[in-house]
Image 1 (cartoon, rainbow, N blue to C red):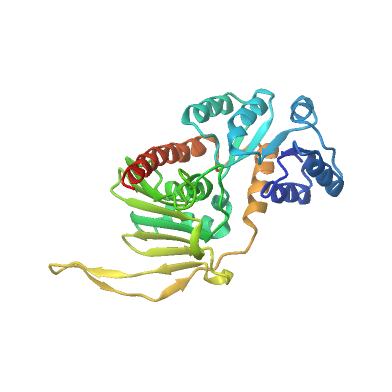
Image 2 (cartoon, one colour):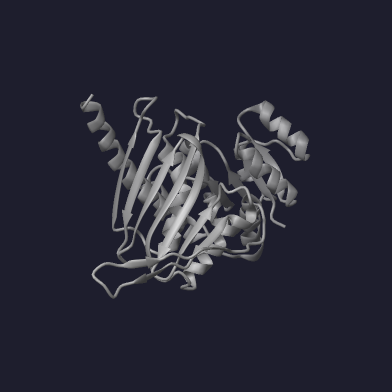
Length: 328
């Protein structure tokens, strides 16, 4: 089995390290905080090493990066140049040019590059993606994804970069194409320049459109993806506590014979999906890609597509926030 060094033992990095250890793949821990690195090393009985030591170790096949987003591109580049396989948490980079450079490195090999777009590995979304690809919903006309909760507020990144990458990844994969138009707006209600609510609008060459709403000032958690096709609509309700009700299919029909469409509502059909942990699936996928020579589902090209939308949305959001500031 591939031997993985995990980099970044913080809030989310702890979960990745745990999963890599439970898979039997964890070989080393890297963290600038010596106490955190030592704690993980003791817990998982692996050495705490520096990033340089990991890159120079021929016994390490790959690295999983959960470091601050500002370090993602540089650390991924160094690891790829050292011949390591790389799993980097979202976002792949903060700049499209850096992501394009990483894509070229990954294409040149030998290291594979995988981006941590976690929801792609959620079994419920995987089933929804299969349904869309099989044509069970018909051509997708509209989708919206809400990722809303109260906190955790941040000052190093806005809610667009913190929450939206997961939803953008899902939406782009369902439409199977890049948007021809991206717009965004939002509010910075508490910290100047740090948006805590954002709305991203996308239009696609096929004629479909989508919205992605993100907020960490919502009074309750809502994680909902709605996909409306010509044949049926589906709802992925990740905040639904009952597993068997997370994916619902609505076979509404429309009578188009008159001057206006007349809908006939259908009851929800709940789709059975085998339960598994998305992060475990994601970590297992990375290890399997190394062991079996497979291309990751969320590879560098997929990460670049998401980043292009993020960067376009950030540009529009920044312009809107400046206009709001002038109006005060």
